[in-house]
Picture 1 (cartoon, rainbow, N blue to C red):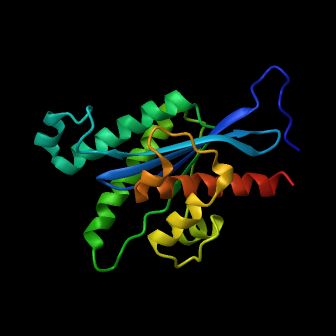
Picture 2 (picture 1 turned 45 degrees about the vertical axis):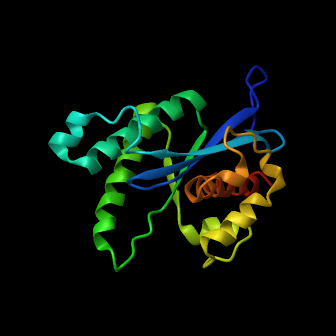
Length: 193
């Protein structure tokens, strides 16, 4: 059983990520490690083309995609430093056979996410979960469409959502990121039984 030192906080953060080369969803669950209940949650989406850290010289020399991905990486690192997560989990990229070139961009994004995690804390692992497993964690069918997953996430009252953007207005990337973080919590609960 997990033993928590008496002089430490019982609250930890779990960060879930929905990767994308233009937009990247982030979901944060703050969890009481004694009860394994969610105390609060928040989510948002980074748009790599609109981030302040998007250095124009990187885009000029290496292309727009590289500039966006670097901006996403830097924004994630700042997020990790702010939230000090115990767990970081990312949805595995889904590569469509009709668009194989998208796989290259997603591979670069995953590498950027890994670099951000390593710059945050070399001892923190980056875990991955496949999309059907994430869908099942929130009660949707493994082959469900985005709107079904959204409906299931919005129905999770235990999320205790208190983000700046109202949960009903979150885009699909933010919703997916919350679902990814929730999946990790389900795993933690199963291990502590």
